[in-house]
Image 1 (cartoon, rainbow, N blue to C red):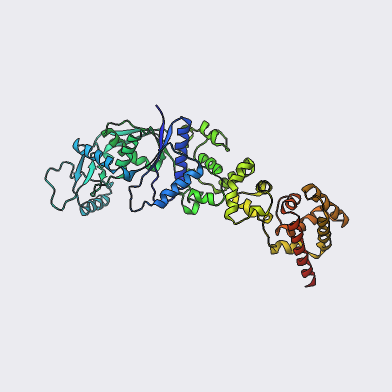
Image 2: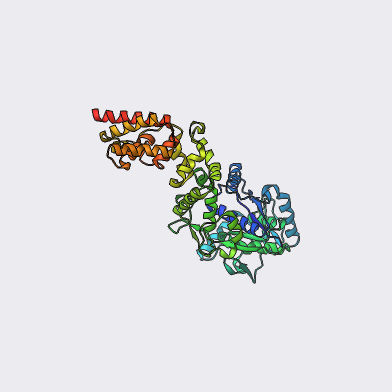
Amino acid sequence: MSVITRFPPSPTGYLHLGGARTALFNWLLARQQNGKMVLRIEDTDRERSTQEAVDAIFDGLAWLGLDYDDGPYYQTKRFVRYGEVIKQLLDQGKAYHCYCSKERLDALREEQMANKQKPRYDGLCRGRTEPPGPDEIPVVRFKTPTDGEIVIDDLVRGRVVIANDQLDDLIIARSDGTPTYHLTVVVDDIDMGVTHVVRGDDHLNNTPRQIHILEALGAERPVYAHVPMINGPDGKKLSKRHGAVSVTQYRDEGFLPEAMLNYLARLGWSSGDQEIFSIDELIEKFSIDGINQSAAGFDPEKLLWLNQHYIQTMALDELCRHAEPYFTAAGIDLAAGPPLAQAIDAQRERAKTLLDVVENSRMFYADVALEEKAAKKHLRAVVLEPLSALREAFDNQTEWDGKSLHHVIETIAEKFEMKMGKVAQPLRVAITGSGASPSIDVTLDLVGRERTLARLDKALEYIKNRVET
């Protein structure tokens, strides 16, 4: 049997971390088993579904590289099919029209809650035979078995047993004829040949209801795997304050898709003690057996650590491909400085995000301002002569490369009987505006002769003004 998974987001918001992880687990299972993943847009909530949210879902999946093999299917385009199934269930006596008013149902609920009973429909219309009144517009309810139990052999949760008398007759079609979630998801899974349903365990309570509909339609059950939810660092449900934002926001903040995929895979799944996985390794090693039964905890610091790891270890040409759009977005003219690969290679060891790479590299392509704190600390009268001597030596330097420039700095330090760092750090502040940069040799090489001389002139002027005042 070929494995067919599905990712069925509802376009009422962005693709968040939990949804992205669900998509990843379904994608990995399909890839590992040489199966396929179906993308289904569950957009029957017309009031809340938006095209913007649909676009955001596609954007997030594309950034992560989670391609789908079938679809996208839109539930709003399948209403005719759902209507056929609803009619079939009615004709077979497996569903019925319910004429109960909202007022009656509200009163029933209040009474049940007052009696500390689980709110549920009482089946009043299940055996109704009298014709409807002129103002009665029915919904359609599914006839849930009243005895027995549903047993689910869940691949993550294990054996789950639900007594049928704990369920009620759920609505499968609203009074306007539109189908409800439980009906549409079952029909879609049947029609699309879904063999494995991998989803959050917040759907576990829906599963017995959907199994009843499946069996009423004579379909085989898929294999179920309900994945525990993601909690914030405080152990509570993941929310925006924890970082439960769109995955594309992480893209915009300079995270690499490879780092995000690695992090999401390890968020509730493990394979031994291994932490770092390539995509190929994830496909090879993924199994539902490795999914934890307890909720996973979102750790933004670990995600940042992973991102830094990938920035430091990724092939340089691949890192440049990821980083170049960020330079463009920041308004940096890459023609006004060194080759991009050289700048990125110089900065990758110090960067946690691609935005760090961009901001740290700005000095190679455009003017920089002196940071007040660094300038006051390092650009003092005592370095006026050494920096002036460096400026003259750099102007006369015939070869502009790291090794040669290092020798110049070393020579000036010896001349003024200063330690190398006592000369290099003021020079760094003069050239970069701050006290942090790659090695001074690499920094000078990438900043270039003209910018180095111009910035030294400004730094020397700054020191002279301090001396005079």
